[in-house]
Length: 219
Image: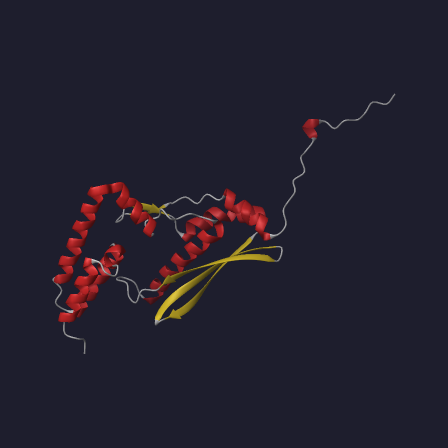
Protein backbone atom coordinates (compact mmCIF):
# COMPACT_ATOMS: atom_id res chain seq x y z
CA UNK A 1 0.00 0.00 0.00
CA UNK A 2 1.39 3.26 -1.05
CA UNK A 3 1.65 6.06 1.47
CA UNK A 4 0.25 9.38 0.35
CA UNK A 5 2.95 11.93 -0.27
CA UNK A 6 2.28 15.17 1.57
CA UNK A 7 4.29 18.35 1.15
CA UNK A 8 6.35 19.29 4.18
CA UNK A 9 4.94 22.48 5.59
CA UNK A 10 8.37 23.90 6.39
CA UNK A 11 9.38 23.72 2.76
CA UNK A 12 6.09 25.04 1.43
CA UNK A 13 6.23 28.63 0.24
CA UNK A 14 3.14 30.66 -0.32
CA UNK A 15 2.90 31.91 -3.87
CA UNK A 16 2.95 35.70 -4.14
CA UNK A 17 0.65 37.25 -6.70
CA UNK A 18 1.75 40.56 -8.11
CA UNK A 19 -0.89 43.03 -9.20
CA UNK A 20 -0.85 44.52 -12.67
CA UNK A 21 -1.74 48.07 -13.62
CA UNK A 22 -0.95 51.30 -11.85
CA UNK A 23 -4.08 51.73 -9.71
CA UNK A 24 -3.67 48.64 -7.46
CA UNK A 25 0.03 49.44 -7.09
CA UNK A 26 -0.74 53.06 -6.21
CA UNK A 27 -3.26 51.98 -3.59
CA UNK A 28 -0.59 49.77 -2.02
CA UNK A 29 1.89 52.66 -1.97
CA UNK A 30 -0.67 55.07 -0.50
CA UNK A 31 -1.42 52.56 2.27
CA UNK A 32 2.21 51.93 3.21
CA UNK A 33 3.78 55.36 2.72
CA UNK A 34 5.04 57.14 5.83
CA UNK A 35 6.62 60.52 5.09
CA UNK A 36 7.94 62.08 8.31
CA UNK A 37 8.23 65.81 8.83
CA UNK A 38 11.99 66.12 9.07
CA UNK A 39 12.28 69.86 8.34
CA UNK A 40 12.02 72.57 11.01
CA UNK A 41 11.04 76.21 10.68
CA UNK A 42 12.81 78.03 13.51
CA UNK A 43 10.77 81.24 13.07
CA UNK A 44 7.35 79.63 13.12
CA UNK A 45 8.58 76.83 15.43
CA UNK A 46 6.93 74.00 13.52
CA UNK A 47 7.98 70.84 11.69
CA UNK A 48 7.06 70.19 8.09
CA UNK A 49 7.86 67.84 5.21
CA UNK A 50 9.36 68.89 1.90
CA UNK A 51 9.02 67.37 -1.57
CA UNK A 52 12.46 65.82 -1.03
CA UNK A 53 11.23 64.11 2.17
CA UNK A 54 8.29 62.59 0.32
CA UNK A 55 10.50 61.36 -2.53
CA UNK A 56 12.98 59.80 -0.10
CA UNK A 57 10.18 57.90 1.66
CA UNK A 58 8.35 56.76 -1.47
CA UNK A 59 11.29 55.52 -3.57
CA UNK A 60 11.52 52.05 -1.91
CA UNK A 61 7.76 51.57 -2.35
CA UNK A 62 7.92 52.61 -6.00
CA UNK A 63 10.67 50.04 -6.58
CA UNK A 64 8.70 47.37 -4.72
CA UNK A 65 5.61 47.94 -6.87
CA UNK A 66 7.44 48.54 -10.14
CA UNK A 67 5.99 52.04 -10.50
CA UNK A 68 7.72 54.88 -12.35
CA UNK A 69 7.26 58.33 -10.82
CA UNK A 70 7.97 61.45 -12.87
CA UNK A 71 7.73 65.13 -11.96
CA UNK A 72 7.45 68.02 -14.40
CA UNK A 73 6.87 71.78 -14.26
CA UNK A 74 5.13 74.24 -16.54
CA UNK A 75 5.03 78.03 -16.22
CA UNK A 76 1.57 79.53 -16.67
CA UNK A 77 0.65 83.22 -16.77
CA UNK A 78 -2.65 84.25 -15.20
CA UNK A 79 -3.67 87.91 -15.00
CA UNK A 80 -0.07 89.03 -15.32
CA UNK A 81 1.19 86.73 -12.57
CA UNK A 82 3.32 83.65 -13.14
CA UNK A 83 2.42 80.29 -11.63
CA UNK A 84 4.36 77.04 -11.53
CA UNK A 85 2.15 74.08 -12.48
CA UNK A 86 3.73 70.88 -11.12
CA UNK A 87 2.58 67.47 -12.34
CA UNK A 88 3.32 64.19 -10.55
CA UNK A 89 2.73 61.06 -12.67
CA UNK A 90 2.79 57.42 -11.55
CA UNK A 91 3.12 54.89 -14.40
CA UNK A 92 2.99 51.08 -14.55
CA UNK A 93 2.19 48.63 -17.36
CA UNK A 94 1.38 51.47 -19.73
CA UNK A 95 -1.18 53.04 -17.35
CA UNK A 96 -0.73 56.40 -15.63
CA UNK A 97 -2.29 58.42 -12.84
CA UNK A 98 -1.44 62.12 -12.54
CA UNK A 99 -2.01 64.93 -10.08
CA UNK A 100 -1.23 68.63 -10.48
CA UNK A 101 -0.71 71.54 -8.10
CA UNK A 102 0.06 75.24 -8.52
CA UNK A 103 2.29 77.75 -6.73
CA UNK A 104 2.65 81.44 -7.57
CA UNK A 105 6.02 83.06 -8.04
CA UNK A 106 6.67 86.15 -5.91
CA UNK A 107 7.69 89.25 -7.84
CA UNK A 108 10.65 89.61 -5.52
CA UNK A 109 11.88 87.92 -2.38
CA UNK A 110 14.58 89.34 -0.17
CA UNK A 111 17.89 87.51 -0.54
CA UNK A 112 16.82 85.53 -3.61
CA UNK A 113 17.46 85.93 -7.31
CA UNK A 114 14.98 85.00 -10.06
CA UNK A 115 16.08 81.38 -10.37
CA UNK A 116 15.77 80.83 -6.62
CA UNK A 117 12.27 82.31 -6.56
CA UNK A 118 11.20 79.97 -9.37
CA UNK A 119 12.88 77.03 -7.64
CA UNK A 120 11.06 77.74 -4.38
CA UNK A 121 7.69 77.90 -6.15
CA UNK A 122 8.52 74.67 -8.00
CA UNK A 123 9.38 72.82 -4.77
CA UNK A 124 6.17 74.02 -3.14
CA UNK A 125 3.99 73.01 -6.11
CA UNK A 126 5.70 69.62 -6.42
CA UNK A 127 5.14 68.92 -2.74
CA UNK A 128 1.40 69.37 -3.10
CA UNK A 129 1.27 67.45 -6.37
CA UNK A 130 2.89 64.53 -4.52
CA UNK A 131 0.54 65.02 -1.56
CA UNK A 132 -2.47 64.59 -3.84
CA UNK A 133 -1.03 61.60 -5.68
CA UNK A 134 -0.10 59.69 -2.52
CA UNK A 135 -2.95 60.94 -0.27
CA UNK A 136 -0.70 62.73 2.21
CA UNK A 137 -2.72 64.95 4.53
CA UNK A 138 -1.00 68.28 5.16
CA UNK A 139 -4.02 70.18 6.50
CA UNK A 140 -2.25 70.50 9.86
CA UNK A 141 0.92 71.93 8.34
CA UNK A 142 1.79 75.53 9.17
CA UNK A 143 1.46 76.75 5.58
CA UNK A 144 -2.28 76.02 5.48
CA UNK A 145 -5.36 77.91 6.69
CA UNK A 146 -6.44 74.82 8.64
CA UNK A 147 -3.28 74.97 10.76
CA UNK A 148 -3.89 78.64 11.56
CA UNK A 149 -7.49 77.93 12.63
CA UNK A 150 -6.41 75.02 14.83
CA UNK A 151 -3.61 77.04 16.41
CA UNK A 152 -5.91 79.94 17.30
CA UNK A 153 -8.53 77.52 18.64
CA UNK A 154 -6.04 75.64 20.83
CA UNK A 155 -4.14 78.69 21.99
CA UNK A 156 -7.22 80.64 23.03
CA UNK A 157 -6.73 84.14 24.42
CA UNK A 158 -2.96 83.79 24.79
CA UNK A 159 -2.51 82.99 21.09
CA UNK A 160 -4.88 85.75 20.02
CA UNK A 161 -3.03 88.26 22.20
CA UNK A 162 0.29 87.23 20.64
CA UNK A 163 -1.19 87.61 17.16
CA UNK A 164 -2.53 91.05 18.05
CA UNK A 165 0.86 92.17 19.38
CA UNK A 166 2.54 90.96 16.21
CA UNK A 167 0.00 92.82 14.08
CA UNK A 168 0.57 96.04 16.06
CA UNK A 169 4.31 95.76 15.53
CA UNK A 170 3.90 95.23 11.79
CA UNK A 171 1.46 98.15 11.47
CA UNK A 172 3.81 100.45 13.41
CA UNK A 173 6.70 99.58 11.08
CA UNK A 174 4.54 100.22 8.04
CA UNK A 175 3.29 103.58 9.34
CA UNK A 176 6.90 104.69 9.92
CA UNK A 177 7.78 104.19 6.24
CA UNK A 178 8.75 107.34 4.32
CA UNK A 179 9.67 105.98 0.88
CA UNK A 180 8.19 103.55 -1.60
CA UNK A 181 11.32 101.42 -1.41
CA UNK A 182 10.87 101.28 2.36
CA UNK A 183 7.22 100.29 1.93
CA UNK A 184 8.23 97.41 -0.30
CA UNK A 185 10.95 96.28 2.12
CA UNK A 186 8.59 96.25 5.11
CA UNK A 187 5.89 94.47 3.10
CA UNK A 188 8.32 91.79 1.88
CA UNK A 189 9.71 91.30 5.38
CA UNK A 190 6.33 90.55 6.92
CA UNK A 191 5.10 88.58 3.94
CA UNK A 192 8.04 86.24 4.39
CA UNK A 193 7.87 86.02 8.17
CA UNK A 194 4.11 85.92 8.70
CA UNK A 195 2.00 85.73 5.49
CA UNK A 196 -1.32 85.91 7.38
CA UNK A 197 -0.56 89.50 8.38
CA UNK A 198 -0.57 90.53 4.70
CA UNK A 199 -4.03 89.17 3.93
CA UNK A 200 -6.40 91.57 2.16
CA UNK A 201 -8.42 93.51 4.72
CA UNK A 202 -5.98 93.05 7.62
CA UNK A 203 -4.81 96.06 9.65
CA UNK A 204 -1.36 95.72 8.12
CA UNK A 205 -2.74 95.56 4.58
CA UNK A 206 -4.90 98.65 5.20
CA UNK A 207 -1.94 100.52 6.72
CA UNK A 208 0.14 99.73 3.63
CA UNK A 209 -2.61 101.05 1.37
CA UNK A 210 -2.90 104.30 3.34
CA UNK A 211 0.87 104.84 3.43
CA UNK A 212 1.06 104.15 -0.29
CA UNK A 213 -1.51 106.86 -0.98
CA UNK A 214 0.54 109.47 0.89
CA UNK A 215 3.90 108.67 -0.66
CA UNK A 216 4.90 110.37 -3.93
CA UNK A 217 4.45 108.20 -7.00
CA UNK A 218 7.55 106.66 -8.50
CA UNK A 219 8.73 108.52 -11.56
